[in-house]
Length: 66
Image 1: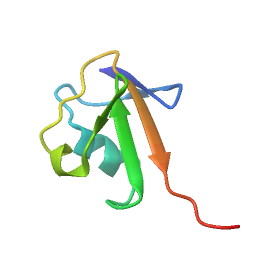
Image 2: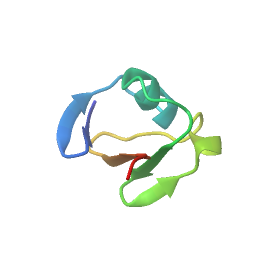
Image 3: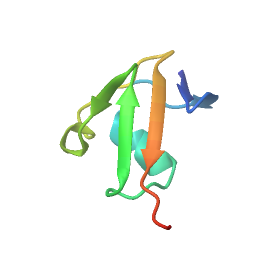
């Protein structure tokens, strides 16, 4: 299936979860916020939160600096 991640199409296996996407993107478990179709998915729900074909996913990462 194809989902849109930060404006770019990405192919994932059917039935993929947010956790599968995080793993696929090599993202850390901390300092990352994920929203699916405009709804923030808490890190504690990544393992169970399904992604559907055509989902719009926004990935935000914390940045340090000054």
